[in-house]
Length: 501
Image 1 (cartoon, rainbow, N blue to C red):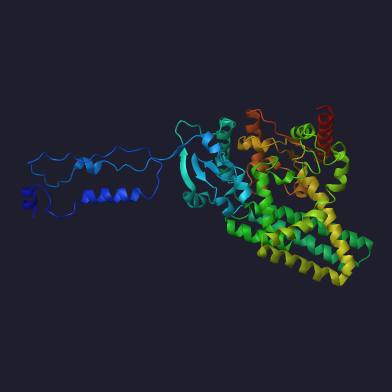
Image 2: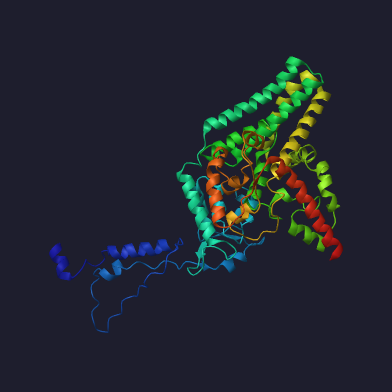
């Protein structure tokens, strides 16, 4: 057989050439997928023999066999082209220089359609890293959304972003991960849950042991309010996926804590809170500042803008006064308490509704036999009233006094630092605020377990000092006072612009 092949110069007629088979198979495969590679050397067909000259035998061509097949040319885009796709009809974003079309995917996004849409037309690399545990798995599902990449001459960041700061923050994040600061101490969170259950049980035991007179009733309300607010801080940890190493366990326990211990839907919290973290203090994107402009004029820029537009929904120059009436006392009992039911029913979140119902059944069965229905409803209102004051003062002290503006598409670090500030560390402040006194570190690393905030704080301070970014930390009472000072200042700015423009 070997002699015959040598004599004829190649395989017999009809035999399939292995090299050509591989080339044909490769070409067929390339037509079904896009690969971000530079174009290969183009293959050319061999010239036809002259008339009367016998066609040579089909010998394997070593050059053709070694030359790679040309794949489809990748699609390249500029930042300007990406920025144009930020509307309702078409939405693109960039992650690690890859361009994704999320126009149809937004409705299926597990974190909600709005949070991902807030980065339409922008680079979303850092928020993508900040919000996802298993990034490799998520990227596999993103392959179907991939439409191209940034042109080689395009920078990795938009002109509005600080490249050096972003590069150094990414190095800091890698350092934080190597130090193990993204790993949770499960004993810490177990003890934290037990202390919530202890507060909850102590509230009921107070009435059972001491009776339902005024003082035991008031002590019960305080203990139950503390249990509610502390359960709120714990569900916050679980919602941020910072307790367990998998999303599944975080979500499961999150449903228990926020649904059964607090009577609030997890989907509602996720829908609002991740938007806040994605674009903090950005009007139109952060739902935490939606009280502008219908109730308050927030921030210097937005207040002046409102005044120039001659808009007056409230007497904003007095907002630092009526804040004490419609702010801390009213948010939970008069808005959240009822809106959450509308949310789950309107969006058909039946699992969340079931968890919420277990909370009310438990509360009804444990307190109505001791108090009666009327006193129980009074207790419930007082608990929500106390919880509301606690919640609003803590959550607003880190943001309302800070910079509030429209989205300027700044880098991740600048976006978070201009919208957040810290409150000094102490055992009481840590417990009272659920470690949200480390708001800066929490916003830079949303999935970091809270017990590690104080460990990363010095590294963040060094980064800020190097780049001339203000790192604000203040006493607790000063932080509370700054809310009122900020509202008074922005109200006066609105009035000046309203009267003089």
